[in-house]
Amino acid sequence: MKVRMALTVNGESRDVLASVHKTLLEVLREDLGLTGTKHGCELGAAQCGYCTPGILLTAQALLDETPTPTRDEIKEALAGNLCRCTGYTKILDAVELASMRMGARK
Image 1 (cartoon, helix red, strand yellow):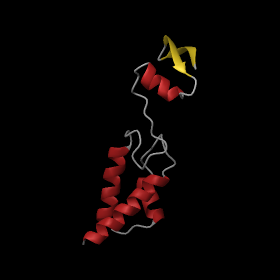
Image 2: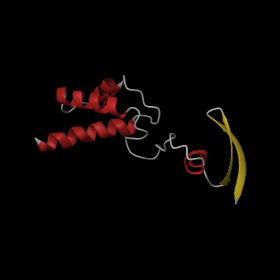
Image 3: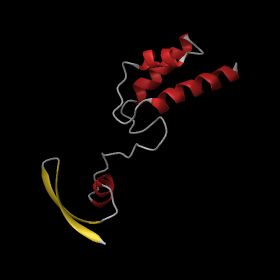
Image 4: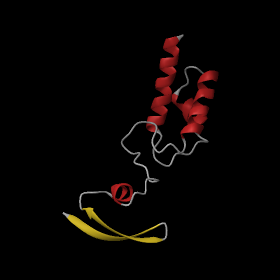
C-alpha cells in the first residue's frame, strides 16, 4: 500500500507517493533521490563519515604514543571529535580492537 505525502525538504515543496512501510530516510534517498542523508545507525564504528578523518588521525596519534590505552585514555583522546550519529561506543570498541591487533603484529 502506498500513501501520498506532501513534504518540504530544504525549503522546497515535494509530493511523493511512497510505500507505507518506508522510513523517512528511505523516502528521501530512494523516492526523492536525495542521497545526502545517510543511514548510519546499526552499522559499525564508521557511519556517515563526517567525523571519521578526525577520529582516525586522533586514534592513530594516541596509539603511536600509547600502544595499549585504557578505555578512559581513549575517551579523553577522542573527546575533541564530535560525532552526530553514535553514542561513541562502537568507535571506542574499534580503537581498542585496533590497539589489540597492532600489538599482535609486533
